[in-house]
Length: 166
Ligand SMILES: [Zn+2]
Ligand SMILES: [Zn+2]
Image 1 (spheres, rainbow, N blue to C red):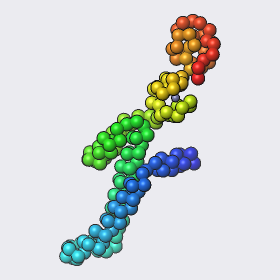
Image 2 (cartoon, rainbow, N blue to C red; image 1 turned 180 degrees about the vertical axis):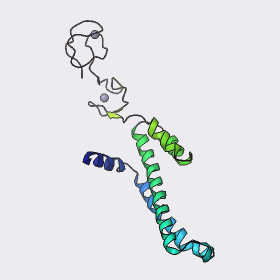
Image 3 (cartoon, rainbow, N blue to C red; image 1 turned 60 degrees about the horizontal axis):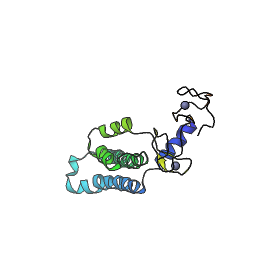
Image 4 (cartoon, helix red, strand yellow; image 1 turned 90 degrees about the horizontal axis):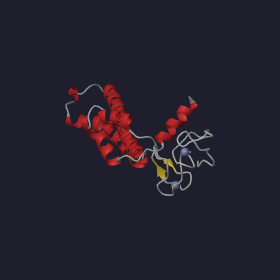
């Protein structure tokens, strides 16, 4: 429970500051439009009583703010997963009924992992670092195929597995 909570917090931390500012502005703008401007332009008898309007503008502003934060999250999250951030940001903004968000969370790639040797960001299916050649999975020292770390003999070439690169 606690871990899930801190995980959620660290995920929130990646939301870009720009998105946070826009979310607050969107919330404030909703309040100004519905509570300050609307009564000036529309006949007072046509709009719901004030307590209702306050409720509507608070909920509406909060929903709008959360949507902006989610767009910011997708933008930052797609970048750190090596996905096309611009494409996905536009998709979640313009595809209606939150289908862009659903598609994003279904299709997003695993997180990039830094190379333990040089720190280059690597795809989850990489077996070697393309920058420094560091082997990411144990491999047979004779034939080079990837094997489980606890094998004594290579199941492909049959030789004793000596020093396995890790
Ligand atoms: Zn490397
Ligand atoms: Zn082998």
